[in-house]
Amino acid sequence: MSSKSDIFQSPPKGLTFDVFGTVVSACLLAAAKTSSSSHSASLTPEVRTRLSQLTDDDWISFAEEWRKSYYKFTRTFVPGQSEWRDIDTHHHLSLIELLKKWSLEGLYDEDEVRELSLIWHHLDPWEDSSAGIHALGKKFTTSTLSNGNQSLLKDLQDHGDLGFEVLQSSGDFRAYKPHPSVYRGAAEKMGLETGEVAMVAAHLGDLKAARECGMRTVYVERRMEEAWRPGSEEFEDAKKWVDVWVKEDEGGFLEVARRFGII
Image (cartoon, rainbow, N blue to C red; front, side):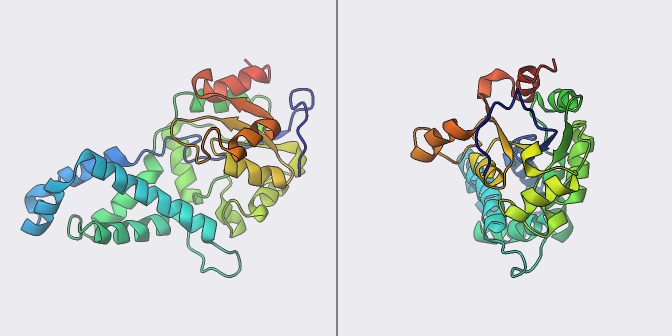
């Protein structure tokens, strides 16, 4: 486990970035709601009635359930035991199940369901992401370290002009974060020791797992992303071991670059 040290006096050589929620905003509400509204004319009376009953709060819940299914899937996956499934496949199958649960079968045909499941490929970056990653790339080797599959990461890179030098997916190691093999494998693939890499994320659970593998930690707060409740024991304890903590209103990755003296 990495012990907290002065990361600015002895900086890492590489940075690995969580992507969903950290680099891109994982807001799925607008896409799901907008897509559904364009189908109402061709729906069965039952589905049209069900659709008319859904409020904005319902669509928020629908989008949150879809995203939570991703977290459950990645955290219960056991390398070498669980059947391998990439994230695009999970998003597709979980969307089918969610539409059934919400009595919305028939809202989309098969091709439309598959297309909607790929909206994760087009999530928008946070305002500071592109400029911040490009700036950090002047000093560090920058890499994704996401549970998203390679094609998804390539699309996000192109869509957001993210500027990562390396695209690494948990799938490269046939595992999912927070399994230790992902963090160790990423560092090795970069030709570095884990202590020479800092994990950048908006989720303290991700950073804790990375730290337990010897990585340094950079926490960038993002709106409504943290699962650990402020004031809880684990959240307050994290303040003692996180190497760099950037608050939500401090400028994200650009602030990280400023603290390392890049800009």
